[in-house]
Image 1 (cartoon, helix red, strand yellow):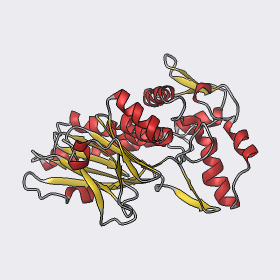
Image 2 (image 1 turned 90 degrees about the vertical axis):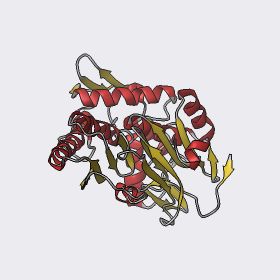
Image 3 (image 1 turned 30 degrees about the horizontal axis):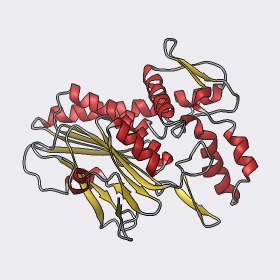
Length: 334
């Protein structure tokens, strides 16, 4: 366990534009494109000698990102997630993609005893919408009333029938803790199918590398967002994913208390034991879900889960301790 110097309080993953500039590069052409989607920016970087082929692969990858967003966006009324939330206890037909994401979310809910829970959307609405609008903290009674509408075990998933429903009226889901990672995995699959061997897909700091950067690893800086000229360390990726969850992504202050979007379903309040969690796995959907899961579980239980799964991670506790800081992660991953 290592104490952070005061100014390095929070970490995040910098954008792909800056990532590419971390080290000098000389080799085949670099094709890069950024588009706005999933409430943030998506950047795809490809290194390939055939720019025509690379641009076609880029087109296919962005189309895949848009396809997943259309399926899983909470803010698109025609998405499958919105349909499920509207239909309540009635069955909703779902695509194979959405079923896969719901089943993976269920897995992380089970192994974390409910710390990861896509049915926490009513709590998210309470804190990020109602509290902000009314300018007051909810009463314990209000929180408990909303918590009655949360519980992954009340989301019924019929895999064979490709459908799902709730067994309680008033429930709803959000896939904000896993959909970006899944979209990145789908885009990377398209790039690999198109023959790309060196690429990086980044959506709002969630990243997956296809291969290396033409002979050298892709470099990801863990940045101090309160002073963006500083970073804690650099992680080197080769066919791996990295995501960071933190209390600085979506937050506001009410009665001098930081309210952020990572809600602990077991308490009904914003999770308080961590400032940031970074996770490295092969698939981005796993990294995305795990970083949120560990953040909610807190340093001690979160570290135990990462150790049990054999996953590398870096946890910054609320008292600014670096926990599970593997030497390879702090100095330069692999």
